[in-house]
Image (tube, chains in turn cyan, purple):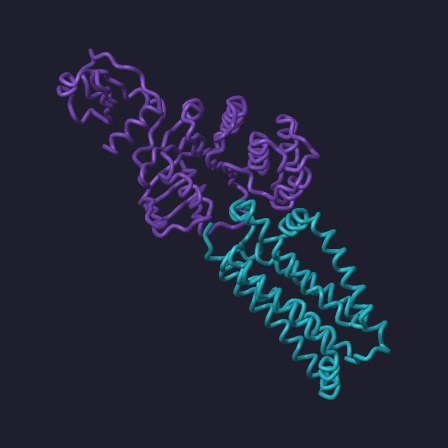
Length: 210
Length: 283
C-alpha cells in the first residue's frame, strides 16, 4: 500500500504546490471574512480535487493494468485511496482543533468533541460518495459526479457565506442540545459512512475487469 | 514435471468475441511464442492469466497454483511486460525504482535492477514521459526481471521497437531462460523475433488455439510446394494446410510427411504458416 500512496503523490507533485497555494489564499479570504472556523472545511475540496487527479492519472496511463497483477490485493489498492482521503480529513480536523483552541473568543462556541467528529465527517463526506462512484463508473462518467458535487459544495458555501445568521442559529441550537451525545452521533456517523463507502468500493473493485 | 502455465478449457466472452475454450500447457524452462492476427485473443489470454480479466469457464494455473488462489507472495513470481509501460509518466527513474522497491518488498533485487539500468544506459533524471519507446520497454523489462520472477508474460513487448533494441530484448530473454526453472510466454506480431528465441509456437486464431508445437519440428514438418493448378489436384488434400492461388499456379503449404519425398519444397517460416492458415480459413 505504501507503494501506491508513493506513486499517487509522486504523480501529482507539481499539482500539490498549486493546491497548497490555493489553500493559503482561501485561508486568507476566510480569515478576512471572519470565517476562519469554517476554513478547515475547505479540505473537503482538497480531497475531492486530489481524488479527481489520482483517478485521472491512473486512467491516462492505464496504471491499473500494471498494478492489478502486482503483489497487492485489490482491497489494498482501494485502501490506499481511502488512506489519503482519511489523512486529508485528519489534517483538516487537526487544523479545526488548533483553530478551536486559539479562537476561543469567537462567536462560534462549539465544544471540541463536536468540532472534531463534525469536521472529519464533513471533510470526508463528499469523497466518501465520490469514490465508490468513480470505482463503479470510471473517471469519464465520474467527472460528471465530480462537477455535480463541486456545484453542490460551491452553492452550499456561498449560501452559508450570505447567511451567517443561519450558521449562528445552527451553532446556538447545537449548544443548547446534549453536545456529548451530538459528538458521539457525529463520530459514529463519520465511522459508518466511511466504512460503508470503503466496503462498497472494495466490492465494486473486486469484480472489475481491465 | 510441473507445467509453468496450464489453461484447462478456459473460455471468456467479450462482446461478440469468444475466446476458447482454450487448453494450453507450457512446460517449465522454455520460451513460447504466442502468435495470431490482431483480435485473435492473444492479449485476452494474457490478461486472463494476469487476473485482469476473469474466465467465464475453465481453470488457469500458473507455476502450479490456481490464479484464483494467488496471494501477493505468489504474484511476486510472475513478471509481466505490456506494449507500453503503464506507470505514471511523471516519475523519473529513481521514483519508478522506489515505487517497485515498495511494491515488491523483500523480493526486490536492487543489484539486478541497477545492472539492467546500467546495461541499457537509462537516464536517471528524465521523466519517463520523455523516454523513447525503446527505453520504456527496457525499463519495463528491467522491472519484470528484478524481483526473481519464475514466469514472464510478455504482451507485444517488441512492437514498434527498432531491430537493435528488439535483439537486445531477445538476448535478455535467452539469458533468462538459461535457468531451467524460468519460463517465458511472449506474444508478438514480429514473427522473425519468435523464430530466433522461441522453443514452442502457440497459434491462436479467432479465439481458438490451433496448435502449440515445438518450433523446429513445426518448421521442419512443413514445406511450400509451387505447382500448376493441374499438379495441385494430385496432392493428398489432408497434406494441405494452406493454399495461395496466383495466375501462374498455386503455392501449397503442406505437411512434408504426406507428400512424395521427391517433390521440391521450399522451407517455411513461422510467418508463412500463420499467413497460409489465416488465408485458408478466410477462403
